Image (cartoon, rainbow, N blue to C red; front, side):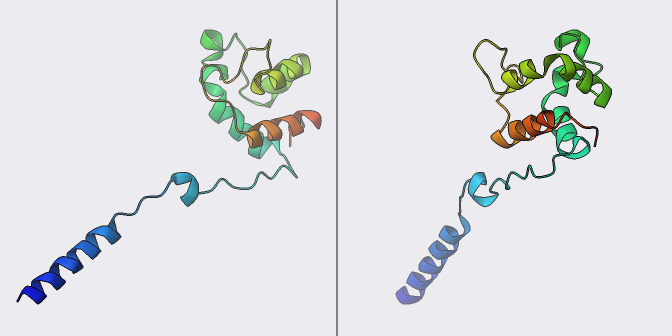
Length: 127
């Protein structure tokens, strides 16, 4: 009887310990490879701008918190970049002397920054 009880306790402990597994999100879901071979406005750029900049720079938020700079739509972002691409790149890179962007939020990832830099270096095509 004691032997059966000991086996029961051992099996219970084994089940409890095997059911408690912890791992970090970074380990389980590693960040993908940064593919900047074919940067497109319609894909990568609009995704980054809409998810990281529209809190302040959408048509509805720009007058309130985006210094009247709406980057919603290609015409708006390209018009801004034609006069301020150096400021834009310096701000997202958090260069001293420029307002770090996104404001009061974490810095963009290296891949997001590189994607935007390549798109701008290519003349910010509407592709």
